[in-house]
Length: 175
Image (cartoon, rainbow, N blue to C red):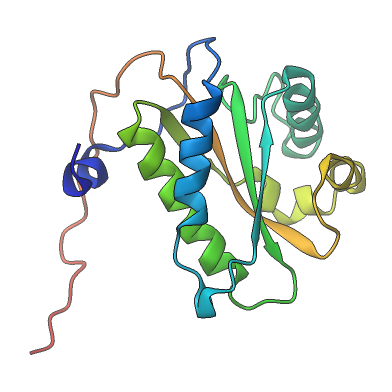
């Protein structure tokens, strides 16, 4: 798959097969993330990769307490959640982490995996859930970092057949 095809055909997935992601494939996706551009080449990110179902269930439960969504699954059933973090005191963290997430999405798609950008761990009311963040610290989140975003990752239950139309009139040319 060439780069343009990868960009134009990637879609978010919200239903996954109950199938583990092979370690070598997961490592290739993470390598793509590490090669994302970063301001001043600081590479100020960390990637917390969770494939333990009990841990995913605990995170889902904590979010559902705040979000008031019963039976919520933070990964929509995907077997992997990649949490991208960055320095709290860096003005570049959100941008750098977002670039790393996009590389995760595109790299995964090129390798036959599906993804979905997960925002819930960045919502103010979720961030203020002390028990959830203490749990994330126990999992390895550095205390001087914040969650930039996450990616659900796995094999799609079915290929997305719908494409929402793209908005028109979003480009301004200055010649």
